[in-house]
Image 1: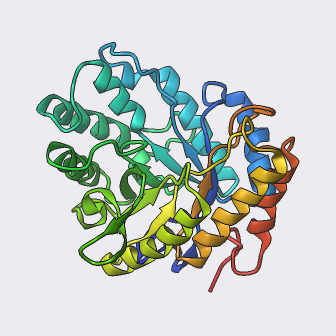
Image 2: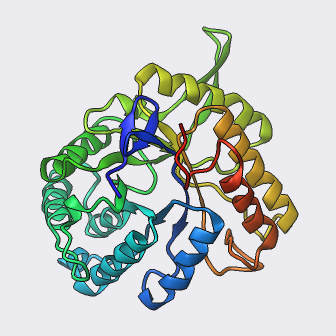
Image 3: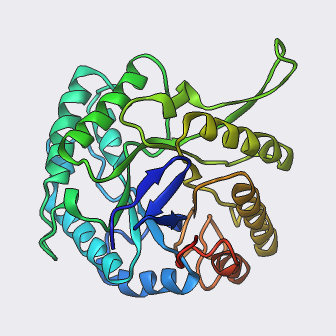
Length: 319
């Protein structure tokens, strides 16, 4: 394996185009013994990346973010992924939830001080399973500061820039992004046209290597409108954009409807230059929630189809 890198609007691996094609995993992160079978399924499904998110206890307790019991599970999961040639998107948004519960605001002086300490600790951490230092572990492909951006100007924007800088000061190997963004499509009367708006133009921020979106709740016309605008946005800033999270709730859609909607997002994303796609989420939920797994046959098979389609084969070298 090698480190995932950015090259213009794409990700690369060993000098070849790399298309992150994966899923978020969070429901089993407290049970490392479940992971071998689950990650085997990820390989069967054709995934090349998994996103670990929501794996810490987010209580306000002092030093809870350093709790060894949680990190040993991540250690083991990273080794499982390394063995299966799966890259990891390590989402550190739980840290922000912890500091919020302590009464700190994202980007304020208390948050910044604790963030610097936390990132220094995480990326100097030695994996208890394989002895790899996190900052030198090429199993990790992308690092996320938060799960979703909730504010993007003033103190908050400065916080993302500072946080990215803290990470890069200790870890120069990994791609950093601020977190998933909800993209708005707005009509600009002065220009007489629809404009894509990505909060704070995050890709122009120092220490932020790419941007990602979470397109939930959009109509077909919304997606057709804003995905091409995102393509223009990424090209203008020469950084990748990707769909970090998307999914459809079994409570509201039949399995066939969910599969068709997933197909639509994949097609529109690939058509408009999305550098990758990770669905929410690969879990065991059947009959409720967003879960995709071997028992949700239509959505599971839809993912497999896209992993095997010519030109979309992320587990193969694409030239």
